[in-house]
Length: 550
Image (cartoon, rainbow, N blue to C red; front, side, top):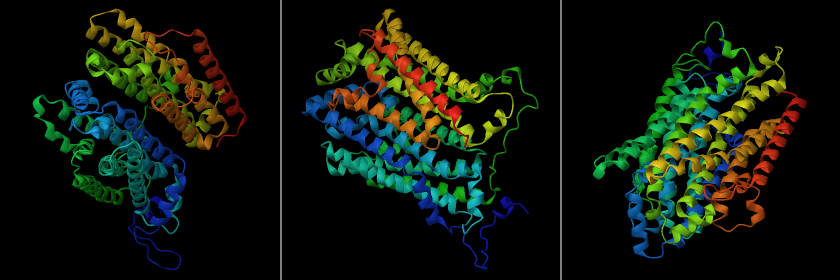
């Protein structure tokens, strides 16, 4: 009888004849999850808490009176693109609402994504690697891994909420409002932990489980956007159908609704019951949905290393392409209202960040600096696929053929860099067309495409850092790569506002990217970044070639 069949029972017996309950060993697995996440989770705690602190600290002093707050609130609430991306300012008199309107729903979605990643990491990914089968051979109940994952993510959400609230209080916001804002993020986190628990039972692979849960998250964000942009607020009730919308319905900094937190707990509890029920109906290692079998023979596109790498990254590239085109298209509508949105101290803020005197140029330069970091996330994800293939032992089969190690790694790097260049081109084209149409001036098409193009060397540096981490420290390459990208984001988006020293800000490759459109193109800076990227990629490949495969 197979181990997977034995694992289906709700209880097993130890060698002493003691009956084990389905939750036996949960506490030990929670501790194991905490140990495995000892780097990843604290880093994200710091990122989200500092993001909240930076947003509040950069805004609290900009709107000292009720008139200025009402003006910015009316500008935001009249812009459909801003409403779709971030949601409205519910209380124009609240400095907390104005400070955090961008991070309420958007930040909640990011926290929900973190919950999805962690739950799948400790459930479906563990089964896929075979570790759950080894754990199940000990004193562990059938339901313990899933229960441990949910408890670990629940604890992560609580600590995240408290640290976020502490950051907001440190930035000068009131304690009740700060705690309610932390609750708003936690509501979404626990809700999507339940969603991921279900998809981990349904999907046959960790990648598919993450994709399904992320799809639900995206749908929830779209539902919230539809509610916020409906004419006259006729569809605002749709927010109650979206866990992301619940974050807004907490009404942080404006008569907080603490009871909304019960919605997240209720949904997570109901989905957890469903997940445990599905767990009993499937074999260990299998999903409720069968794996799709491939073709009996490979096509010509899979005859080489690059074709295989392109096939593996195909879905990821297409998903990112849709995202950057939508994001670029929205820039036009934002630019059309930028002079009304960026007035007074807000205009000074954007000029300080973008380094340009013209408001439109400053705004576009600032947005493209952020989009450059965003597309770097694709480059990091694509290069880390090397490590994923290695950890899953699939590369062993490939390297048993005449395919060499460097050629295999170089094929993934090529897809990552070419994919990043294509994404920048698509995003630049979409943003350029929408901006030119909004301003009635075709010259903006070329200007925006230039702003997109100059981001590529810095993106290549992040890809090189990721390759170097895979070559030198493969077991922590994921944490190192994402951690470096997060540090760059904080340096670029928050460091300038907080007036950090120049040498510290200069550690980010994006600090050396020309602030286009409108700024001067520094050929030396672009060549320097390109040289650093090449050096990192070569060093990473050399280190990867010398070390043993895990």
